[in-house]
Image (cartoon, rainbow, N blue to C red; front, top):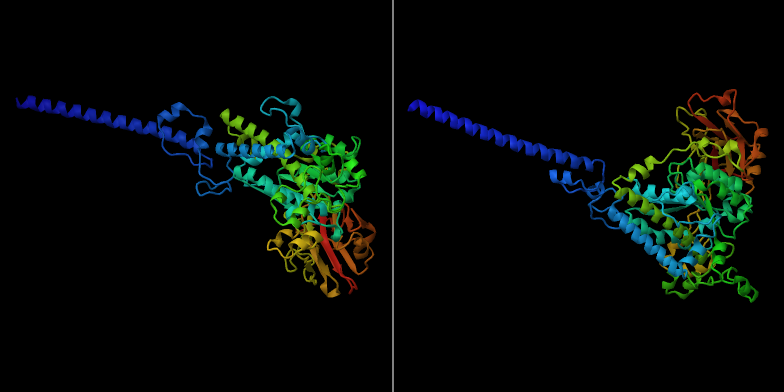
Length: 618
């Protein structure tokens, strides 16, 4: 009996052991399966910038919800971007897509209503361009005829900005003259500032910020499109999404080589921004070189808006009115024939300011009404492109694809100079290049990257070390109401918000007058051609007096004086081209430190100060 008892006990222990072992196995299997599910779920999260709810098991794996349902879970974030629950404001969620589309539709509807109808808005805002815009197509279907169009390029620009995780701003930059600067108005009334206020809610809904860098400068410093377009990478950020340009009254219809330069150079910038021009006049003929450029470069979305054509397209009979003594484009006239004051002017309580906000043309400069139409045209076109970009992004999401794999900035194809078509008007030596020109511009404002820089006199690489180098930087200090205009100066002189009138532009340069000032040494950036230009300040024709005919200065390259006979006034009379291309022999061609240097030396005391405003390189 004791032996049987022992045998039974042994069998019982064995059974219990096996049961325990099975339990451990079952528990372990569940852990493994849960782990697999967790890894799968975690894998979906990897690299994303949205909060995904933790947990989930095998059932979640089996359901296989679309990736964007998990990745782009709703999150808490205010419209301004940067809420505590979501640090990366560049991540474009379904929630933001919906909110952005809502804001876009709201803006488009408001302009359709403001201009009386959709057809009228299209006539006044989309048609008065060198090439009229047409977004009446479905970008999600096969649109072979649209794939190389200006519309396709603009949609592509918007889509990439929206889905690139580390892009927190949609950035535009404008270079130009006093029209670009907004002169004879308060800065607040320039088209760029109006556009920032009007379009910002759209980008806030996307979790981003809209910024317009206005680098416009008046003519007082002596500049023109001929020298300033070389400075696109310094005057505005090289990271801009779209470039604006305006020099209507300087060009005389003859700036097509410079336009083409800019079209080609900007495609070498990181975001390959389209170039859009503001012209205050009416459209040129189809045979005009400007029109030819728009037809030749649609793949880069080059285009120009013509403000007066926009007003004319609305159908108002300006000619009959003018014959009867009413010139709505005369200096200081209020009311454009469609509205008596800007939209924000309707809310103004100060009657004098309200009247001012109805002015179409201050003189040759647009007034707030002219600038409002301009702002509306750009915003209307860009918002239609945004809506199409949203359709493409949403299709990717619905198809289970990550739109960033298509549209992120890192996926943008790199362009080289040989990828662009042969130039039509610009000098191939300077416009068929892989690098954007460099520029050191002392004038204000600038938002981008310097090209050349002043070398430290004590730097070990400075080939002119030991020589006096005492040139000084100078900037003009214009007053608050400089270039504002009498009407708004009188209105704002006693108002607390007078700062909204201040313009940003001012002349500047690096200066010397005495032999004891010695020299200024510029370390030049990497160059592709070897072009070196210096410009003077301040005046349109100072190049000859300050440089060409000034025997009291010496200009050298890599310590070798440059023969004056090689200099020429170029690209305008403010500037002197001291090198057309790289030297091919002698000490000039040698760069033992890896850098090229330009030296400008004062040999004798001078009656007049020498002031350099720009150093341009390519």
